[in-house]
Length: 222
Image 1 (cartoon, rainbow, N blue to C red):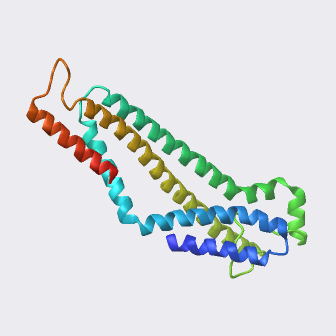
Image 2: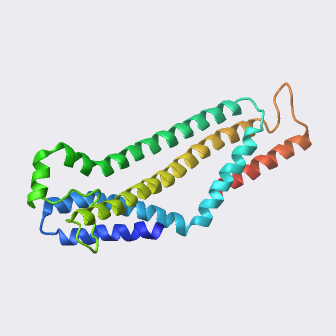
Image 3: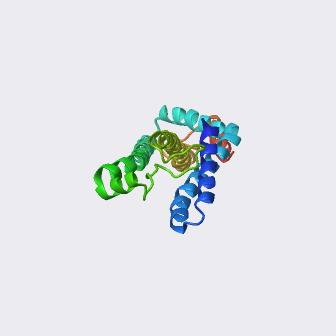
């Protein structure tokens, strides 16, 4: 599935070559093609460094579960805050992305049914069908069947590409949010190494806390 969308992105560049004499079409296509290229680059990087990313995500999940079982003052508020923020970022980004994808997919249909002039021009051959995403296909996409099949391919690429961008970006953003919260909780851990004035820690307990802080700091840096 990844390879199919990477190949589809290549067909967008091929289409630009065929449209090189129409500068307006070239510029219109280039905007979508460059966005697709960025998405392909992100996911290719993600797949090549999959082992590193799995290590990061496993660390985030394991540390998050461990932190949720702790009772120190202030930590619950930090966890609640970053959980709510991460969920909000993920939900609204996903919503925004797929509203965009739906608009991109439905735009040619909407134009066809709302513009009488466009319908007339398509029927008499003076204007071509609007595509979901302009791309080259090895068949005539100006026939009804060819156009429908091309639109299905383009819609698939748009839906899958939207999932790509959303998955990569939300993973990256939420990981950064987690790192910030982990640093805040490590500050709390550091303050409590020797206990408080009213409840000082024993030497043995202070050493244990110091070792735990060092271990968590090392893992976060790595």
